[in-house]
Amino acid sequence: MSEMRPGKFQYLPLVIKYLLIINVVVWLAQVALLQMYGFKLSDYLGLRYWGSEYFRPHQFITHLFLHDESNFLHVFSNMFALWMFGSTLENRWGPKRFLNFYLICGLGAALCHESVLTYENMQLSKLAQAFYDHPTLDNFRVIVDKYGIDEMQSFVDAWQRLPADSDQLVWQTKHFVSVFVEQIKNIPTVGASGAVFGVLLAFGYLYPNQQLFIIPIPFPIRVKYFIGGYILWELYVGFKNQAGDNVAHFAHLGGALFAYILLKIWGERSDPRS
Image (cartoon, rainbow, N blue to C red; front, top):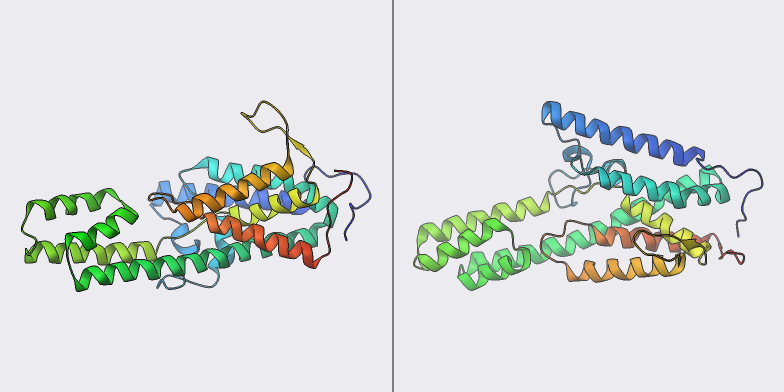
């Protein structure tokens, strides 16, 4: 069991400071490259599904330091949570153990995310193959109902207007489905959320009774209830798998899972004073 290290509490400890700097600088570089040259760094360093032709092993690490170029809130919320909860953990463990913890949680989150992507891509391939074998509106609707992107509705409307045996319509829809399958397979994932979620779990596990003030909740809430509720919410929306939801919920849960495993391996226990 690790105890809080003696000495003055550092509000911006070493590893947290450099993680904040690296993530913000990389995000600014992403924005600049995109606006000036139309170059998306996430296309090369974001984590791809390992069945994609664009997958590279280094993406397991590099995706942790990238965020959505069009969404400042993405990088801000991750870095704020990392500082708010991670500072206490680094003061408790020291920089080396905290960095190891952070990276292992991030890698664990990526492995869980890849496992979910494998299942989802296999399911999509089965649906697509069923449509290729029997190109009917009903088989196409199964894909539409699950993924529901706007472009699909135009094909549904065309199938309803034209004869179902129209060779051109069948070919166009098959081509659209094949392109869609490849697009889904090649979507990059970016963000430190999985690693940060591991930090949240660790803080909640070690200091369960600490009080938090969360806007817009008008009263303090104990960390164990906040983190527990957050995990249940991630499970709910992850299994719901609503069309248009581009958040990697199971990466968040994977980060929490690996955090819990590490805490058990290290023999960490809740602070009785918290």
